Amino acid sequence: MQNLRERMMTVAGTTPAGSRSSLRERKKLATRRALRQAAIDLAAEHGFAHVTVEDIAQAADVSVRTFFNYFPSKEAALFGADPDEAAALPGRVACEAPGEPVLHAVRSVLAGGVRARADELAELWLNQGKVLRTDPHLRAAQAAQSAHLERALADGIAERLGTDPEQDPYPGLLAAVAAGVFRSSLSFWAASGGTVPPDQVIDLAFQALADGLPERCALREFTASTAARE
Amino acid sequence: MQNLRERMMTVAGTTPAGSRSSLRERKKLATRRALRQAAIDLAAEHGFAHVTVEDIAQAADVSVRTFFNYFPSKEAALFGADPDEAAALPGRVACEAPGEPVLHAVRSVLAGGVRARADELAELWLNQGKVLRTDPHLRAAQAAQSAHLERALADGIAERLGTDPEQDPYPGLLAAVAAGVFRSSLSFWAASGGTVPPDQVIDLAFQALADGLPERCALREFTASTAARE
Image (cartoon, rainbow over all chains, first blue to last red; front, top):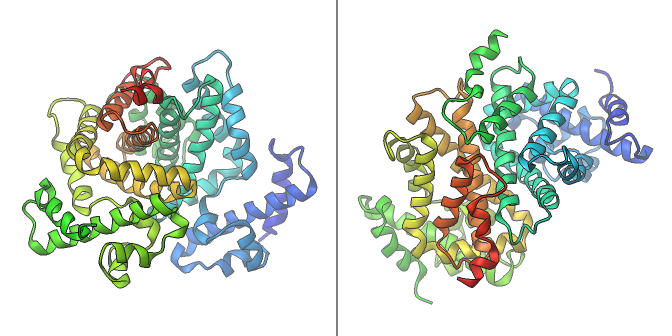
């Protein structure tokens, strides 16, 4: 196996979030990604219960102590997003597609983000899905991660609308709903084998949302068997 | 303070879920509720970091060992639903309002459930909201609970539609979205002081969802300041 951290360094240097960051920051991001990749790969291969923090650290070529500088537990390593991405999300939601409704902006940011990173991360997402289906109790760890995404979305939605989320229920509502659409779409995509572009599933799910979640919607023509045929 | 378990025994005996259960089951339910109530009350009063499992067990008049028969951690005690309720949810979603769209059925079950228990549980929900706003890291524990609700909803939606959630993305999507609506509505209701019926906020949020989440919706006329004036 090629050194995981070195591979991640290359990737971290070429992503938009990393392009203007210092070498030190890129090294940290590469280590974080290597740990996440190792955690997911090992869990998908051996089952999460049989993977230790020691295994993950070793596969990512760092010490156990270093592991705990990045993640508080092996559960947390499975689903953590890059900190830069989370930090950039509110600004993206606020600025995307000016003049369009905020639901459109959220849809565009989330589907676009997945589209931009699908080549690099599709295998990681597929293995995350596999691990979740094998160990359903890990949905709690995934839900915790989803709560972070939701908070970042709510901040961006409130900023775009120029509203106060303490006074206005809309940013919290749309953020909770959008995080649910995102998570359930990626889960379904992974469960159905990941044979079509994941952003397509996310986009169809957001279309169903914009239409008021009718029981007949284009998303449902996209069944698991359709995906397997493509 | 009146003995918490005795109070909960009375309540457990009168709720629909408990009405046909054995004395032993009602006792267990009463203990679970007493522990949850004690955990929330203590956390709301002293801050979650300052509350121990020992404190919670003592307030609920049980041993620490008994506490751990019900909950794996003090975080888990804060947001756990009654097991009976969770078990009954899929059947309710499947049978509610026959002939109506499944979104309508989900809305009716969730808003109706809150309406039926508001007198008994409003204070608990308000204190849960207070604890969450004070200790934002507890959102992870709440998200884990929300994941349980979501799974139960997905089962009920799939049953009602006669569809396979492995093949059809709709049950997972609607469940994730509905759980998000439910959680964000109750949070907003609690943050705005809980001065209007909580089921009203949930129902308006579901109306917004059915309308495709337009930026202008009746839910937003219901701001925190409106609630404070009523």
